Amino acid sequence: MKKFFLYLILLIVLIQFIRPNKNSSEQVSKNGIQTEVTVPENIQSILDRSCNDCHSNNTNYDWYHEIVPFSWVVASHVKEGKEHINFDEWITYNKDQKEHIIEELEEVIESREMPLVGYLKFHPEAIISDEDNNKLLDWIRTLEE
Image 1 (cartoon, rainbow, N blue to C red):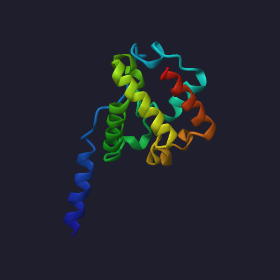
Image 2 (spheres, helix red, strand yellow):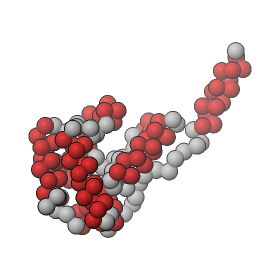
Image 3 (cartoon, helix red, strand yellow):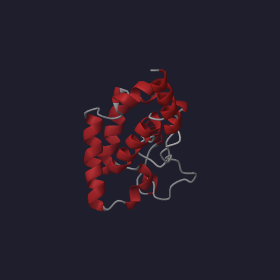
């Protein structure tokens, strides 16, 4: 039994060296949504607080994101989030992709599917109030025009 725990501890230590790449860019994106669409300051504030960790090229990492397996989970969520929309790569999407993204944005904001509940447990500041949710929806609907 003692050997088992020793091997378990060794395994836990060793897996700490298997790290995913971090989602962090030193540069301001030239392809960001702001280059093509007006993003009011109050909307940008909501996006920064509640969306951009998973939907941009820059994730703010907390200390516990350095610990495996948390780092793997975060990397997976960010990868999946960026597959749906990356606000830092907006102008790289074609017209059909943008239309689809706008439809999805409206749907997930309206149904309050985003931010994910698991994310909100660790980031309560990312909770979107009813008022901010309505502001986001109003802004998203201007993108449809």
